[in-house]
Amino acid sequence: FHEGTMPGICNKCSGCGDTGECVKKGGKCTTSKAGFAVSGGGVSKKTFGLTLLTMCALFGAAGYFHWRKTREEMRDQVRGILAEYMPLEGGDDLDHNPMDFARKGQTSSLIS
Image 1 (spheres, rainbow, N blue to C red):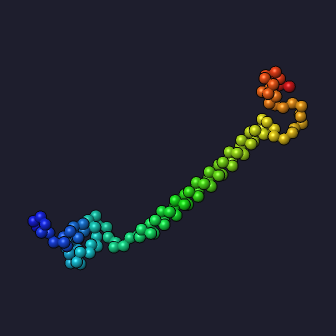
Image 2 (cartoon, one colour):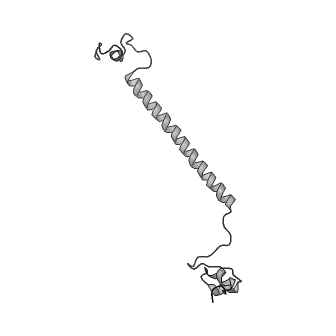
């Protein structure tokens, strides 16, 4: 065909695998050039958007709960370490605090 004289059906069926069948059906393509079936429908924008939003919410919630869990575990580990080196409650030795050496400017000994 000369430029601009091509029938519209040719443009509709140019991407089909079986152009003869497409022309017979009035421009409805049933297979692509790669041989895969062409579906007329698809996922609506609303369904796609809601699915995307739902997936983002699920991953966000999972991330938040993981963050909270690791924060609590870290807090417990720090409390355990501090309790090991600096007892938080009064112990047997009330006269001696393990941090006295730092408060008195290195005048007290670490070893009592």
